Length: 408
Ligand SMILES: [Mg+2]
Image (cartoon, rainbow, N blue to C red; front, side, top):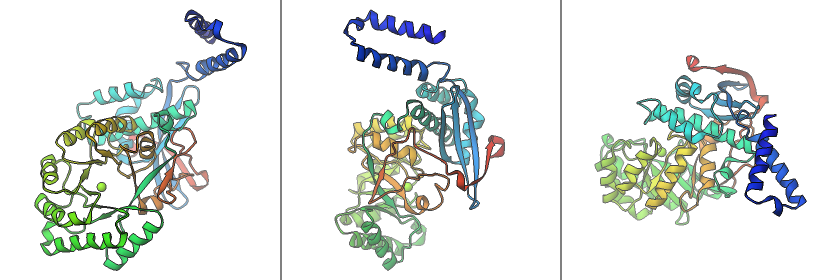
């Protein structure tokens, strides 16, 4: 009955704006099917979120991962993960009840309500929780419309270029050069290496060694590859400035997190002292952190993480802010599903790359994922499956349990 009333109203509206006379029989048939789609997929009650749960999977190898799941009243299911324990804890304890019975398409309103719901919402773990809910809602939206997330976001890039993040590889000179060459031959023409194992407290000798490593990497990669350096906020401003001056001639694409991103002044100072572009952002929480750095010209590359910064919805806003400042957004590679869909939805002028943490991602991180994102010749291909295209490989799961924040 409710459907019939809606259908009548729909044709009243079409007729009222004068479309009926213009519709031939074929168009009318299409209109009927479109109208049926509207009433069947977007009916308010059907879109109500009936369930939001967290599941912990234990695998045949002993691996364990947590995924967030949701289901609408009409049975459309969403999944996002693997997610951090802390994100699941906050999302379940403080947020899931506020999402139940909401319309699945209201991601923006839900985000704002969650953000307004707690005086500590503007940082760290709370935004990790919001990120989980937001990413799950984007998967749900994809499942409702049967489209991949990057297309719903308006993008059309079928593949995205990765940069290889070389955390964990040997830094013994010969081995490091051999690995850099090998990775380049595999298609990693953009590589980031880590110089965090030494710091200013190790004395001036290691500064020269950290300069020498850059020389060796540039020699191995040649001039037709991008080289970036990350020090995992392990240095201090004078040391970082001295090192940066000495490596300017090796043409780094960026120098990442010399100091903790809490120290905006140090980033401002360093960016004034060197021509090497400075990067940070994996610990940015929300668009406001990003704007503070960009308006001061403190960085050229924003590395916000869609599982930490506030989710896909927030990362899209961050891209808009960065585009105004002429900065790049190259999301942190802690996890890939949300990051690669946002990158694929944006102009390559704004989002040219996505991070691929080679050892982590090629290891067991996506153990339960039937189709883990894997680059071929340095590129990740976007899925045609709806949402983020995450499907669990049941053959690897020996235990699937629903958990609450009390289990974390
Ligand atoms: Mg980093």
